[in-house]
Image (cartoon, rainbow, N blue to C red; front, top):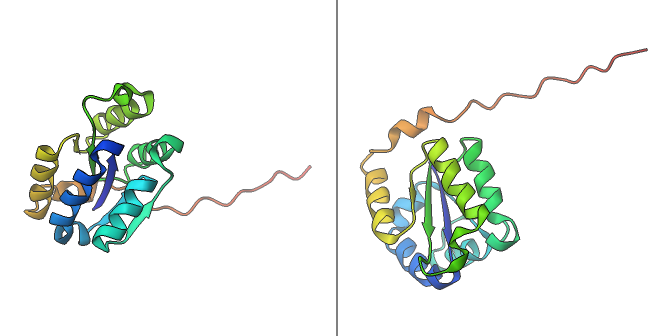
Length: 145
C-alpha cells in the first residue's frame, strides 16, 4: 500500500511522534510525503520516504495527482484546524480527490490511528484491486507525407 503523509508546520512534531510509534506498520508499506515532512520523517524514523516538493511549493498538488491516478491508498494529513490556510484550494482539492477516488484520509491523529490499525488488520486490503495495471504506452506512429 502507498501511504501519503502531510503535516502543517504546527503539526509536524505530532506527525513525527505518531509515525515513530507506528513505524512498524509504515515500514511494511510505501511512504510518500511532502518535502519537509518527508525529510523529517525519514531522519526521525529511518524509514525510506519518497519526498515530493514542500507543500507550499507544489507538494500537495503532486500528491493530489497521485491520488487522482489511483496510486495512493491512504492519506494521513496532520492539519492544524486553527490555521486560516486550511481552506487553501490545493488542500481542498486533495480532500475532494480522496472523496472521488475513495481514498481513506485522516485529518487528525485519532483518525490516523484508526486507519493505520485497520490497515494492519487487513481492513484496507480491498484497495489492492484498485490500482490500474501499468501498461506500456503505445508506440507513436508518425504519418509520412
